[in-house]
Length: 420
Ligand SMILES: *Cc1c(COP(=O)(O)O)cnc(C)c1O
Image (spheres, rainbow, N blue to C red):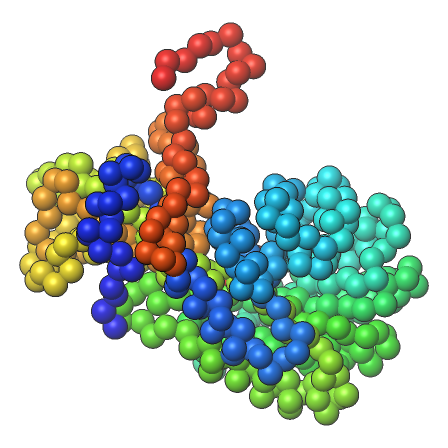
């Protein structure tokens, strides 16, 4: 399907009068409509809750929009917990799904009353050493082996550092029950960025069966199954998008096949989606600084891999639209690059695009999750601003761009003075 930006050149020109490129732009209306579609798809499950994976887009305005749409937060670090807390997301609105957890982070999660998702059985003692164990505890499962959908191997849980074995889960539940825990959640994240609508239903069926086995083995009450993240988006125009209604129905079918007959139909479904909640509703907006022609044609942008790491890191495809040339023929072939001293700093390689001139504004699509948040300061590049396209069609600066002052801030313990 053709990918269309959620902004026009005119709208972007209004923004750039106040906020220079590059910036990450988010579409409030799109975020809200998608969050509602997710809730509708799981409305059959009374306890359903999405805990937005804060690492995908750690901005308090985004968290607040999702909070208004009924979402909690999935946090994995101290700073992410503070972010959620600042928006008023606390207590059972927070899922703390961390690994290699520092004591300070665990104390903070406990003091907020967050659901705690233990990455390992050894964390039972760690948790108990910090005070009385919570009434409800979640445990992260690693089934080992490979994870397949049909004939396709999607990922290799046996190579993943996360979670614990089934035996370890049963042992952890028994010990936690002795310590006073009364309800349990189970969690697993087995494949990332999966657009196959069968991913969640297959994962759900594995976790539902596990829930039934753990209940029989331990007598524990399983209160929720946390399907975590992993629902993918259609980064490529020819890729089918995930169909959340189909996914919700698929999970419901497994629920009715496995949990209902076992008398476990009070189990709540939790999700920790990041990419699915935000990726399509973000654009990286950037201006063409230079064109060069050597053995290929190059378009050099004011954005670079420090603003969006996925192409450099994973070779990920991100669609690009030249604003104002949405319907022009794609009769030129360009490498679209940033200015890092790294040859992998390319947003696109040999991409067919309309003819590009200096000063043109490019939109890089699907950057709303794992975009800004994976940013870094290599080569002295400064992190960009974040702007919200509000649902009434206006815009709001929701994070300013970094200045060199910010870049040098951590050198304030030295004798050096820096210009601005
Ligand atoms: C990254 C992560 C998520 C979100 O993953 P997406 O692919 O963005 O949906 C959810 N839960 C945990 C524990 C994660 O590490």
